[in-house]
Length: 212
Image (cartoon, rainbow, N blue to C red):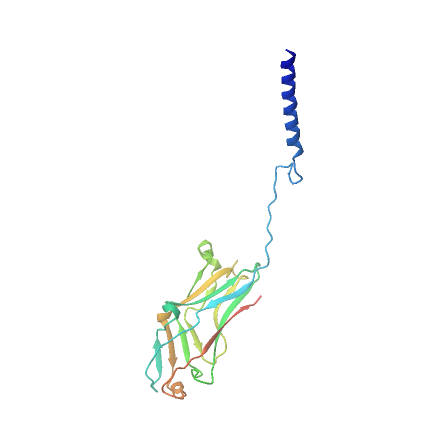
């Protein structure tokens, strides 16, 4: 009987020892309250021009002093739409931006000053799906854009959050069908071309500017 009592007492001591080890393992990070705080730090976003289709090729056309109107263009990788991409990740209710384009006049083998490149049926779509949630965020876009060689900058798109809440926030794509792009030269402009044979080009400069 004495042996049985000793055995029971030994077992109880073992349980007590294990329990004391568990209490001693409580770390300093354990929170006695029933609330946990989760946080994240956001850095200031930016307004940025992402990309534009690199080339526009109106192909070949017979030379004529009567003038030229060449409709339809070929884009890289046979793309069907000319694309302009931009992003506005800034936060604020008074922010605005505008996108303009200008066409440089080149001295050698450049399209004559006054030549026009038109982009028709332009649309703007949200790359983040924001316009599906709120159509008021859509920026404005010039649907039928006419760019003149040598002219000052021409408005393309803009957003003004002082008029509509969150207008222009997020990532956007402006799209113009390649089939509806046109190159136009008047008889006077054709007379300025130095040779009937040869390739002539110009450079379109897209400028995205934060107004506020």
